[in-house]
Length: 153
Length: 153
DNA sequence: AAGCATTCTGCATAAATATGCGCATAACTA
DNA sequence: TAGTTATGCGCATATTTATGCAGAATGCTT
Image (cartoon, rainbow over the protein chains, first blue to last red):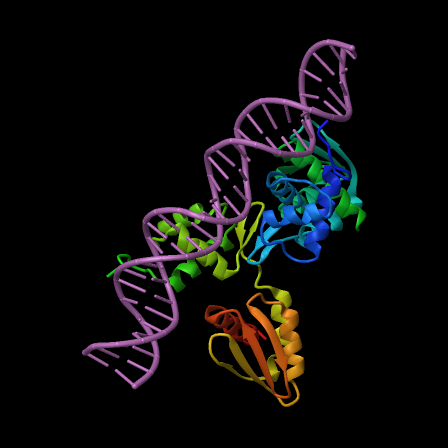
């Protein structure tokens, strides 16, 4: 058993990091590690590095910060939210998006414009979009992002 | 003489970097060095590191990018632009800003809110604001930023 | 349940980035 | 112009960040 600590788990830890960054930039990952320790999370710099990447944190002159949920990109999607019908992964590298009839081109364009890094490319047919992703993780991510953008709309 | 190259000089090089980043994120500083070399600039990673810091570049998941001129902060200043009368450094750590009568508080507040990292703190009197900066370089920077924000207004 | 794939992690270390120092200029002062 | 101060830079290196790898835990399939 390798889970000595109380509250430990990835999701909680990441939420803690989000919270931490909300209260101001963190100069280094080492600093984040310390801050987490105080909150009761025992994590290494390795994990923090991975967490920050996953959270999409950016490093500014003063340290790590969270982008305010890439409003640009989210908007692109939000605008076509009601054209979406279904989201279905097909293997780790392909996401199939069903849309309203004739709307696929429009949705594909929005995805292109969103410029999310996990998207390799899109093609839009009539009511179906194929979206190629770099990996299974990227695909999960993308899925979460789209769902989030939609629900916020 | 240590300036073997043709177009060399800090300002030009930084402009080249700005241009480079405008065309897309740069994964690493090494990449920037190569790109600069192709444009005829011979710079080391050290210089690029300093340049990027100076330009206020941020490192995202995909690489170095330029913030779109911190619209938030610039706006804060733009709004009080016509209240400004004079900008005068007093030593490397103090910038004295003359404003319209009675407007100093307002300007000081705007500066506070702009949250530029080179500003240590401000005090506003009646028609004068004292702005403490971290260094001479920071002061130059700040001056440039204010002037830019003003001219854009 | 056994086997197999996946996720999460830490460790060790590679890769990338920042910086102290010293030198060459440039700028300023008197 | 000579002295003094500040700037820009590269080199070497410290610091920081990313990652290949292997082990533990979990979940899925049969």
